[in-house]
Image (cartoon, rainbow over all chains, first blue to last red; front, side):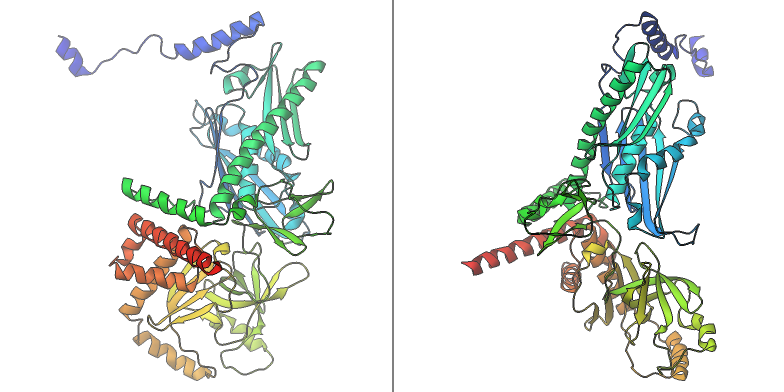
Length: 262
Length: 320
């Protein structure tokens, strides 16, 4: 009897399939209700960022490229150019910066769900255009293509940081490196570098793109519900995190510079 | 260096690392100290009024880098030399490019610069070799000189006011390149020299090191200063019959692979080094297709490390 059952290949799924994830969400919801400080799903405290892994040069065909991995979020950015503008042959004194963000079909848990982030391309452009010295390459275009391999929360800030690393790698003149960090407001807490689950539950979000050496903010996006006092703190928190992230970027660039200057 | 993805075995990895480490220790310490990244301040002495060059900007009275690379100082001029940026032309550079478009009275060439270069019909020698005004007929026959996707060798003539680049090809040594291979390497690996055209007699091969990082390895062509158009036509039919001999083809491939190995390892490409590498592959019986294998890379790195060490040793010996 048992042999026959094995041969027919029937199997019973575990009743608690997907339960673990549901449990985590449930836990987050409970914590929110209690309004208490809680350990985050990946074991960080609320002011801990995910470990950042960044690397230059994954795409050999591009002028410059960078790969970033922050926890589950994995992003690859390729920079092409400066090259002759194909679209507009009209004369322009300044160069053009062309940004495009796309998601792989397998980036999110549900297939094809991340594809609606259309506004990311425009936001990436706005964050970078203040840092790139566009007047140094008249009549030409720099193309920045970002591909999100896996979306694990805080996608846009990671894309921006990764793109500025790729631009520096491509040898494009910039005033400073742009780094970007986002925070989420959950209940009374402000948590930094949120994951997708946390972003889904947030009351409000804040993203700051910052040039640490120049002390200039290139972009600030505020969404949702915030109270006065928290915003100031949150912006300062982001700026500090940006400064620290910038150090990692510089180290990466210095490594490659030393390696190639031999 | 970064494009190097080799299937190394254990011993090869150890040997390559040793050779690279050797090279790193040989490199002057100043080189690594002068590396800057975007927004780093460049230390300068403000008393002697310095000139800020390429890749630098002024911020609150400090000189700040806007590029990643190595700081170079020439007298008062301070600039940043980038390592991976596109080619930056200078007047008189010899370049190799590819025709991408034929426009009225001009060809557009892709030369790895941020813009396409322009080769005017009026700034090149016509095939008949006579100096005269260019007529409308010449303009219609432009495609018989260069077609799209032809590889062309030319010289940088100058910049227009809007930053676009003009080329010239006023000698028989410039012009269309055929029967050979075009390699693209990072432009910083080709240094400006007196001589960029090389005829390697022992191989019957021409080698052109374009300043823009395009390298041409092809069969040697005999340069005739005066060739009439009719002769050219005759030559064409004769050429079809006389194909490039097998031996020359092999030499072309071997030299091209030598250049590929050297550029992948990040060594400056000089004619001597390319020949040496090709000779080394011949003497150690490495097949042409095995030259791009891991073993030959390691071997080349080791040879170069040894050569530089010897050079340094001799210099020190001379100083004493």
